[in-house]
Amino acid sequence: MNGKSFLVDLTRCTACRGCQVACKQWKKLPAEKTTNWGSYQNPKDLSSKTIRLVRFSEIMDNGTLRWLFFPEQCRHCVDAPCSTVPDNPKAIIHDPETGAVVYTELTAKEDGEAIRMACPYDIPRIDPETKVVNKCDMCIDRVRAGKLPACVQACPTGTMNFGDREDMLKLAQERLSAAKKKFPKAELVDPDETRVIFLAAVDPASYYEYLSSDASDVMPDSLTRKQFLAKLGKPIRSMNS
Image 1 (cartoon, rainbow, N blue to C red):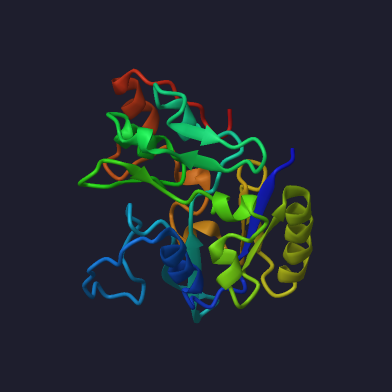
Image 2: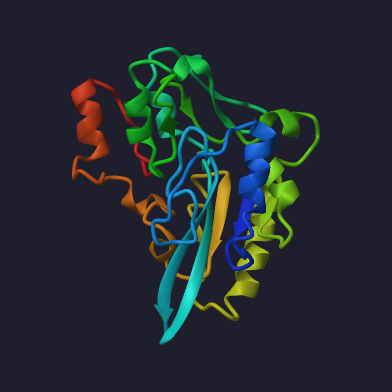
């Protein structure tokens, strides 16, 4: 398998949010009005205007309070479940050169909610006014021009890494081996299924419920994605199928 991949080393993230700001700037996405909701994380969730978000989590680790930081983005799945939903095949493009999963404005149709429900990582968001579905597109314009994605370019700690998939998988194994010396439970999250590979120091669920695809079957309202899509008469492929 060729194309590009990210390695996101969560053991190095300091929540500086440089990647979050760089994404906004490059994509010319507007700021959002937010309110204090009891966390340093801001805004509270992804939206059509915030397609990259550094999530904050506090856990107790062997009696020690620890911060966990998770810069969330589209995973650019190798076999993207969301691409099975639209009736129009031009609505979601799987770029053959990079592997990027790119949405177009044709996504702003009746299938918008189904596209979000199909995602094992709960990434796509619908603009309430335009109804366009938005998410990270791997900065495909920059990548095609030989540049790094804006988030990677802005990262000062080595958390964000990007390059040919083989190189990133090799780097992921090297970083994992090094991380296990300090974090014995460190693991790579869904490296075979996605092009955005996260290195987690602890259980992925401690960072956020949708860091891995393990939570992909059950939605907050207890309706499974398969049940939802069945109601719409839409086929859906599992990440494990």
